[in-house]
Amino acid sequence: MVHSEHNKSKNSGGFALIILGALMLFLAPNIYPEMPELGTMALFGGIIIGGIGFYLKFFRARVKKE
Figure (cartoon, rainbow, N blue to C red):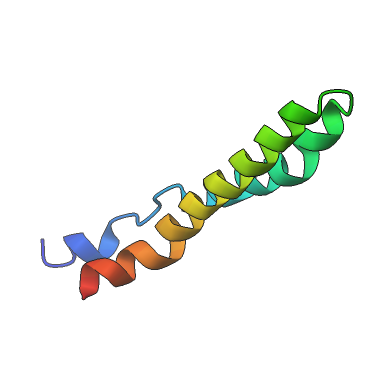
């Protein structure tokens, strides 16, 4: 098929990781306010997961082309 590459889904799950990271970043530290260690870990986890999702969504295709 000539257009097989054009018709493939380019969904890598990056957007879902961005959303999950944002939810962890904003909601997880407020769920257990009496455990600040858990809130700090959730804060850093949200930043890391969101960063991975951002890379997959916006930068991975640009790195492959170069």
